[in-house]
Length: 409
Image (tube, rainbow, N blue to C red; front, side, top):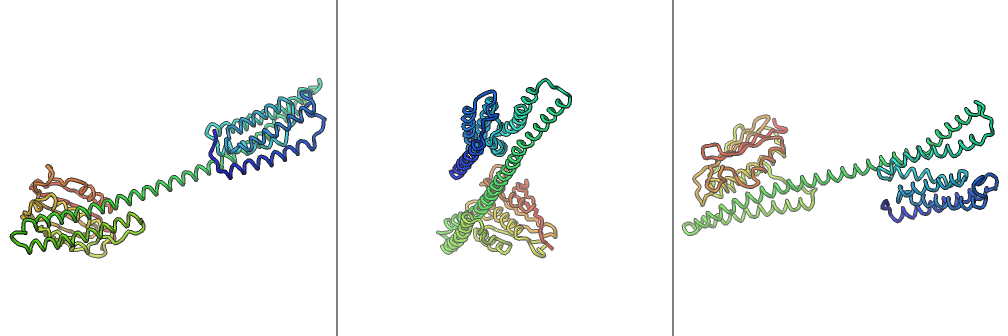
């Protein structure tokens, strides 16, 4: 029933309604004469009192037009019916009907919206009947065709003029309503896009966090296990393993700090891994005791897009992490299985194949557990590529990615 308004809006509406009431009251009382006022229904004094009260009622409807369009419309109809019932002529206060119809279309509910439209047509018809029909009925016995035609023409023209005036106010409100809805839809779209962008950013950071932490912890665990078994027989090997753990942990800490910075400040993307960082990745994996073989054929030519470099690095990082965690190369220091990495840099695409033995720590179907495979597939899809992963039937797990080259030679 009541719309929320600010204090400023409420004060403006009250002031406007008060000024309108004073203007309408002055315009009603100053030219007021006894001739024709309240003819046949009430005397002059009663008509004057009713006119003053109706002016106040219309002013109240004007003050409530934005707060409650439905209530303002109901008050206006009530005042109009009383005015017609008392036989009063049109009053200056009747001008309040136009802003009331405007607000029903601009701010009213769906029902109030169409009630305003119906009121514009119904009000025009009531006004025409009230002004024209009594004059036609009271004409003395003369019913010449010309007189009838004149009254019919006056009836039609009065209705058309009244309807156009009232519908104009309602139509302007309907146009304002359309603008308000369009602005609200635009704001909602902006919020939805902002939320989608924030969700995409959080997903990307979560994916990077998983790649960094999972790989680093896998290397640290492998080194710690190797150092524990080699500590008694070869102290130097244990010291080397501890050095590798320290270096890997520091690198992981730096990456995590960068990701947390991105989480706090979305504009600061920070440097991302590229193909130049693959050698460091290979060194970390080999330092964990993995027999890693890398083959590149054919070699890359031309420029490689940064997004493709990041995708290749993250896919390879996750695949090698899974080999450490779930493959035979990560089982209690046994390093007999070899991990093969093969790159094929074609003109239109790059193929990455990682093959490792399936160990006892793997899932029953040979697949790595967790979100690693999901993250690798997402990485490939982000650059328009595909990724397949699974056992090959010969006791080895194969990750195969095909990524389109953007800007390749």
